[in-house]
Image (cartoon, rainbow, N blue to C red; front, side):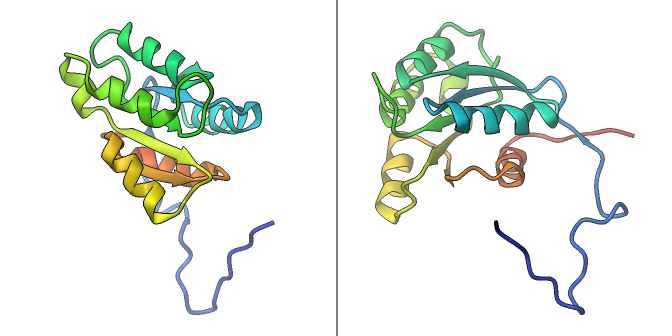
Amino acid sequence: MPFKLCHKDSPIEENEENKKNVSHFGIKILVAEDNVLNMEIAEFSLKREGFLLEKARNGKEAFEIFKNSKEDEFSAVIMDIMMPEMDGLEATKKIRALPRSDAKKVPIIAMTANAFSDDRIKAFEAGMTDHLAKPIDSKTLVQMLEKYLPAKIQD
């Protein structure tokens, strides 16, 4: 169980005064993950934050879902690398090759247990935007998406 050390002189990172009231309500994310537990974690984390999810069990399914979606329907894609039928690298290349503008610009975030630098390089060469190491941490997953998505501030 990971713990964060807090020193007496360090500021508290998340107090109510520093939190922005950010809404992710209605932002649709495509999540491609073949591991049931990892999908459940991603689904719980994202739905709790207000995101809408479309789920794919492998890269081939993720590609087909994206290809058959309306342009700009998905604000981001979270893509596992190691999946059956078609891996995440190949699915990303195929999405990026689609003849539509959103395919070129949608953030595609690699989600993989392989966090070595050559794995990161392969992900970026395939057209992925960023790299997220497993095991999935809910807070890190949401922060990664917030890095690439415009925030909607609520009053």
